[in-house]
Amino acid sequence: MATAANRPAKAGQKFVDKAGRFFREVKAELRKVTWPNRKELTTYTAVVITLSLIVALFLGVIDLGLSAIFSALSGLGG
Image (tube, rainbow, N blue to C red; front, side):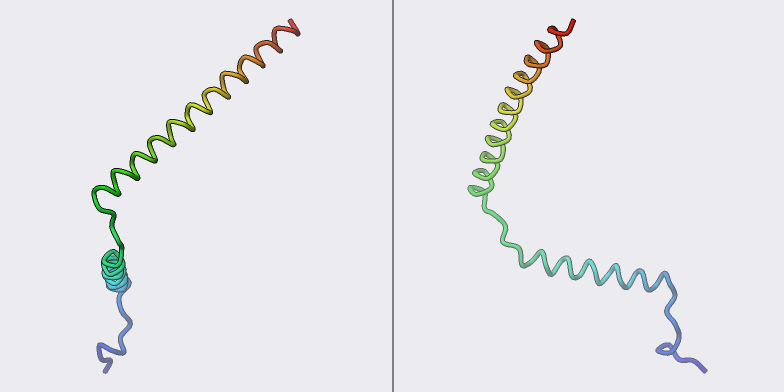
């Protein structure tokens, strides 16, 4: 007679066991994370927003310049 140890696990139970282990490991890893304090978070957020605006402005200027160049070139052929 087969015992529980010898019997193959059902596919659904195997998935539940693996999912449970995964979430336990995620929880353990999140405990190791050093989270920023409020001042650091505010500083980092300001840096990201500022740099995003600078890059957007730079790309906008490049786009306007290239649009003007291609408009001038397309006007020459017509």
